[in-house]
Length: 447
Ligand SMILES: *[C@@H]1O[C@H](CO)[C@@H](O)[C@H](O)[C@H]1NC(C)=O
Ligand SMILES: *[C@@H]1O[C@H](CO)[C@@H](O)[C@H](O)[C@H]1NC(C)=O
Ligand SMILES: *[C@@H]1O[C@H](CO)[C@@H](O)[C@H](O)[C@H]1NC(C)=O
Ligand SMILES: *[C@@H]1O[C@H](CO)[C@@H](O)[C@H](O)[C@H]1NC(C)=O
Image (cartoon, rainbow, N blue to C red; front, side, top):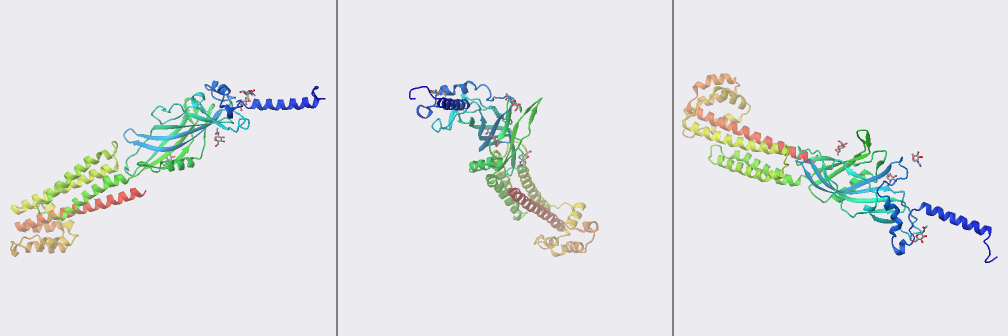
């Protein structure tokens, strides 16, 4: 039988094999024979390249599904004035191209190839909040797998609009939204999906971002509401990126120096009020504080009114008030020592009613503020005043009875005493303010 006609059996076998091969060739659209020895034959991909102007679908009733994920690699800038967040993303998109398929076994085990993106159809995913046009570098490539899956990664610098609330500066947290959506394709033509779980995106981003900059990534969460524009519905994925400012720099450069200056100003109440040095000292401090504010102005957000500005204004006002008070007391001492004016009755009654709670004041008044040159005979009126107040007489009565009896020396003492009371009140106000601000800073820092 050698050299003769093929038998029916051989014919059947050959037909089956060729039919099987035929079937296989039909399912693979790329002829990759020789890829492993002579490199990629451009002609075999020409069919795919020719289709790049149209979305890779075989049935237009089925929307193309694009999966996206990203890694936030840097938070470059947060601009409070323009309300913008500048960040850097590595965006990854995956989709299927049914016109690409080959059998890796026939192709020397090649299961994926990189193809320059200018020859491929690319989904037009953009970020809705972005205020800048896409500046994707040219000449990027995408991985094309043997089953038609295309993986495309690109770096994106996003300048996005973000509603920034700087009230709690420098302890502020911001929640910015990055919405990925197609520019053109509605839900009938394109659906968006996720490549990874959102916590994976957050974790990878945190790992990469950790060492850098002023901002710390807190969390990333997502929502997938559809966006309707007119009659068309677009698929979109929203990512909420929560970031927090690291306050260390601002605490060291803003709060600590300011706190020191205020503390010194508060402590300067221990300089005797009648001493000439107190006013110049306070003026110097005020000057120092103004210089500090000028220098630190560029660290503050350039728009809005953060709490810290209110704090600085309060510090400044306290220093100004304490300087005014020092001037007032110096003036009072001068006046009291030359020609003491009569004390207005309301002031005296106010003083008596306010200081009546404190037992220390009258003895101080009686013992210390009496000049050495004063004869003792002038004192009983004052002493009596103290005693009467100790007996809790109504202030109005004291004032009516005693005012006429006050000698000029007692008037001097009363004025000095008044000065000291004002001094003490302001000092306590200072201490209260310091304590409140320290507690506020600690509470804000820990939340
Ligand atoms: C694939 O291409 C090679 C040459 O590049 C050719 O010999 C072979 O017949 C082609 N195979 C198919 C199934 O077209
Ligand atoms: C296209 O897809 C739709 C929906 O799945 C289906 O009803 C239709 O038969 C498909 N058309 C073809 C030609 O396969
Ligand atoms: C997209 O993601 C879904 C679910 O994670 C997965 O089933 C699908 O195969 C992915 N599609 C592509 C093209 O990667
Ligand atoms: C950010 O804002 C969105 C919507 O306003 C909210 O769902 C999300 O929980 C917020 N994220 C954080 C961390 O506050």
